[in-house]
Amino acid sequence: MNFISTRGGEKVSAARAIVNGLADNGGLYVPEKFPSVSAEEMQKMLEMSYPERAAKVLKKYLTEYDEKELLSACESAYAKFEGDPAPLVRIDDGVYMLELWHGPTCAFKDMALTLLPYLLRKGADICGVNEEILILTATSGDTGKAALEGFKDADGIKVMVFYPSEGVSKMQKLQMGTQEGSNVNVVAVKGNFDDCQTAVKEIFSNGEYAKTLLEKGVVLSSANSINFGRLAPQIAYYFSSYLDLVSAEQIQMGEEIDFTVPTGNFGNILAAYYAKRMGLPIRRLHCASNKNDVLTEFFASGVYDIRREFYKTTSPSMDILVSSNLERLVFEISGRNSKLTAERMAELKKCGKYAISVDELSALGEIFDGGSADDDECVEAMYSVFEDVGYTMDTHTGCAMKVAQDWFAKHKKDETNMVIVSTANPYKFPQDVLYAVTGNDVKDSFKGIKRLHAATAMAVPKCLKELRDKPVRFTKTVDRKKLFDEVLEFIK
Ligand SMILES: *Cc1c(COP(=O)(O)O)cnc(C)c1O
Picture 1: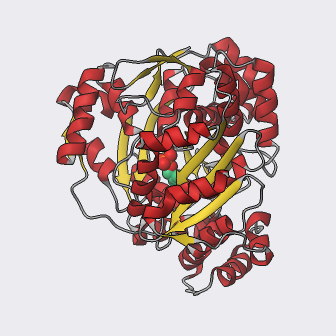
Picture 2: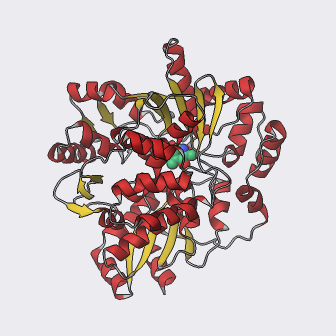
Picture 3: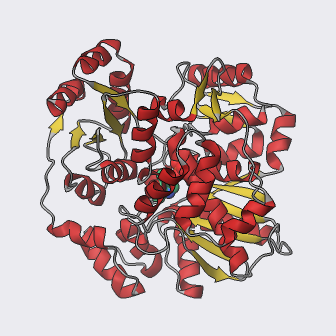
């Protein structure tokens, strides 16, 4: 299957799309057309394990990858999860939580980042890239840890993560600082996330730097969520959760269901839309935001406007104004008009906003709607479910819960089954979750974990429990002008 850029001009193979990450003109790679999954294939997939289902879905797009190899890569990636990689938990009649946080770093990013090293290395081999690959990532928290863990000790790949010295939680800092592996490095950058991200982008766009690296046998790549290699593995769990509902006789094959997805960069929910385009019976997609409700406004008005205040919330992975993957949806809704998409993205860059047409908005409304929750509403939603059925969720999932509850309140007769996508283990945000379910405030994360365990009896994941006793390997903080020196030092 070939991939094209949302901004026109290019046509490349899947392997090349993954290796490049971003198209030359700044556009995002999208499949030339959506592959479909037939009724017969769905029947067959019913009997399959999660890795088998994932390999089947991936093969639809990654046609030049070997099917057996893809399957064995999925098997080793999802063997790193504790039990079922994507279990469904029923919390009410017709309401289910899809838990995507049983992987090595306790957040849904593991679903894709445990597989990306294979997709990237293999893709480079297919394209004849023999150099060592250096993954550079600027992170505001979850992505950095998931990338480090995913790429640790991968052959022919090194990974380097930069995080803002003033922008990550204590838990996240510890998770990254204690990272194991012979091919990893973590450096704090003085300033906030924007400073850090801008400095990393500069390295990517500097031709002289690229030349220097190439002379040393190294090429740069990114593990960012705009890479199709991040998106593809996410499509699989939408299929798998649907099949699980059929297997459990909660729905009939072919019956439509809804998903509510806590959204930041629009990667997770976009994967649901791709699944729908491949034929998965999805009726509606509910896009959940926190107080940074740019997307809620977009789905209501058709205007994407980032000229607004930026809020720091208790769901930090959704604190985002420019949701990069939305470009892929806007491209589809425009009738795949790459010229118009390029114009809109240029307008966003120049004026901080763009608008879609009335017809496009109404087509979008057939599938999508948006809602948001501020920190207090999120706490209320988490508390109400804990109180009613004893189920504990994290703050990001809490936002989604509030949006789903609003939908239920407005559509009392709606009998469509709802799956709420749960994106992080509650213990990743122990103080905020503890506050939501008990009203107690504690200052220390480990104390939060202990109290949360006492309140919920939920098992504490190994990866967070052991953090306390792990030696910290990475403690360096540098000025943002010194990033490239750090890169050179690391690849020496
Ligand atoms: C990254 C992340 C999100 C947002 O996902 P997108 O694909 O960026 O929309 C939501 N919740 C958690 C816990 C995350 O780590």
